[in-house]
Length: 422
Image (cartoon, rainbow, N blue to C red; front, side, top):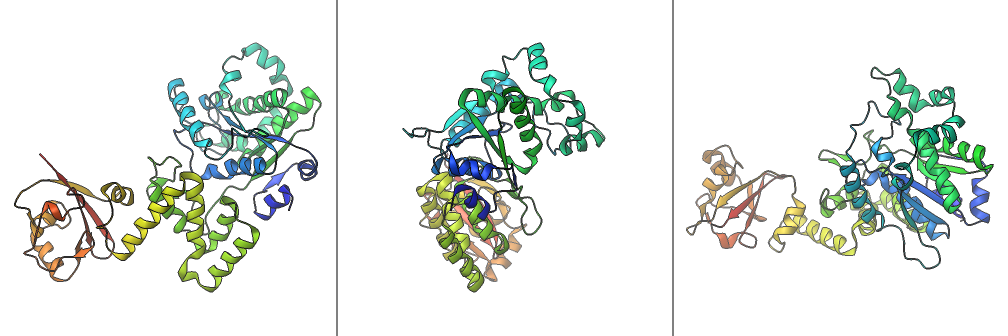
């Protein structure tokens, strides 16, 4: 398959400009996608355009990852219900630095023959003179056309309206496209389907000012089969930063993909072949309980984002938890596995702790009586082992690395008790 056909088969072409298929087939194209630094990390929703650039590079095209150090000071209003809170220059610069590091995981900036480029639009936007910009760029845009764009029209019709700051955003993004065209002969912009209006505005600017045809390709915005927004969990967004979303939790996000979504995710977020994805599709139909497609999806995406070591640790942790024995896991691994469960501390005691008193004081149970009843019914596990006697005492030596008790109440409720050494 040629690249465009590959993208179409994977469901990655929501819309594109006429003739793009032929252009990608006959010439080496320089393409870019922009990432505004509104947070200190990209999230899984950004993987579509990031991997889109990676697919272009693998096919011999030249990718540019544009970090919006300039546009990030404004904020894209596209399909947002209200205006963003403006970030300070220092906040934007810190976010830019963090996102630069993340993008380097996906694109090859050291390829001798076809290196990717990482560029910050603050290099030109923050030095623009207002009068020059209005004369040289603003005169090519009519207010009528800008107001006709759905993303702008929605905001104008909303209760809060749209500020001139955000109304000007499409001009800034269009100017980015023009600058990249002039400096690097960039003729293609990638983005989500909500960016179509901004992308076509940039194409029009290049046509008017340089007399050159530029192209756009937008990818679908994702919803899960259950109707929820892709990349959102009860804990919030799924980030690419391992501090914000620990690798184990990242792996579990993909492992828990709905059967109705998993094959599409394999097409979107991995480089697996059509044949391999067909095998996994068949496995999902014939043996859904084995979750083979979800496991392969989790392996592939976690490997791309966090590396092989993260995959090994995530799978080892999952096997230990499934088997009920966490004794072989380290404290760091357990904290990765249980970042959001209730936690408490207890002072180290040479004589140890009565398990009943420990459960009550740590908040695992509401009282010592409840703890006793729960133990007698077989509903308490400490570090994967069932507590059989309410008179049992736990010693520091019983804790993981002498520091941590993992308590399970019933089938699902986990608690962490950390030992504080004086």
